[in-house]
Image (cartoon, rainbow, N blue to C red; front, side, top):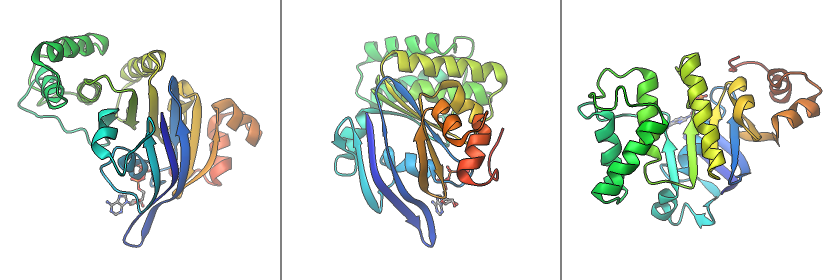
Length: 244
Ligand SMILES: Nc1ncnc2c1ncn2[C@@H]1O[C@H](COP(=O)(O)OP(=O)(O)OP(=O)(O)O)[C@@H](O)[C@H]1O
């Protein structure tokens, strides 16, 4: 479970995150939805301890992520916004390398790598060097790498960015399977369909502030709009920065 209270972060004069509080439960998919520049990536970076908040608290399964970043990180699987792979390694080697970094012994690392390669449908390319991978193949490898230590909490920053329809659908099924396994999944997107397709709860964020937290249906009802897209535009007061 992830609990965030009154997060704030500025870069010089840019107030990227002004006031963000929410809770993401286990066995649920929580969406962080907001237009470009809303502060989603900055929020996630603070959650996975890459950045220190100027103010506020972050608890990962009750652990204070600011005071105990290493312990918090062990409970997190992260697909960051830039998912660099080691180009000279195959997908299997990339996954195995991360497994070893996470402290898995060789045989469990190998088994876990094979399991993720099967679950994510990576067999066809898993033993090719990752240089030249398609966007979909890169994302799958990065997700496998993020999940290698079987984390209870999973953060996905714009996971379907650049994926085609088939790859998007496969990824959605995979994200739903993470929920079935009881994990806490937090995913960010500026694409409403993405959020509507998988999320149980939506945290709407604009200009660094949370402006609504509800289920997709709740947001539609609350704004009296038929589609989540219209509800979103009504909530943030503009359609700027959104993608359909
Ligand atoms: N390292 C940084 N230095 C300076 N400004 C930054 C930095 N990181 C983010 N910002 C600024 O903070 C604001 C929020 O950015 P952030 O990347 O968190 O938004 P986002 O919601 O993830 O947007 P997008 O959907 O475009 O990825 C933007 O104005 C951005 O330019």
